[in-house]
Image (cartoon, rainbow, N blue to C red):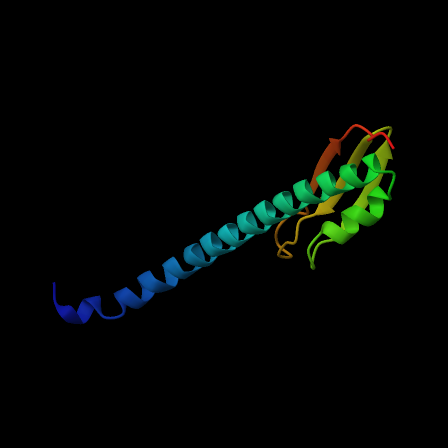
Length: 110
């Protein structure tokens, strides 16, 4: 086979690989966003449960605890249990995901 007939084949191979590389990068970024949101929600719900156990506002503690870029979709108090829902940041092509976390702490005696 002559070199002349193989001209441009590496360009075509690269063009075929680019969408796969971009897709893998988007998946990695989305998994990182999901993990970051889950960790932040875990900490926020614990802070909310702690505030509730001290007789303070669980809603305010949760919202104060969440980092910038995240906002609690809902903060519910059921007895001594705090339940929060946080939307995961996403790209427009990725389906919406919501993380739900709950925690409780016994009330402290005063």
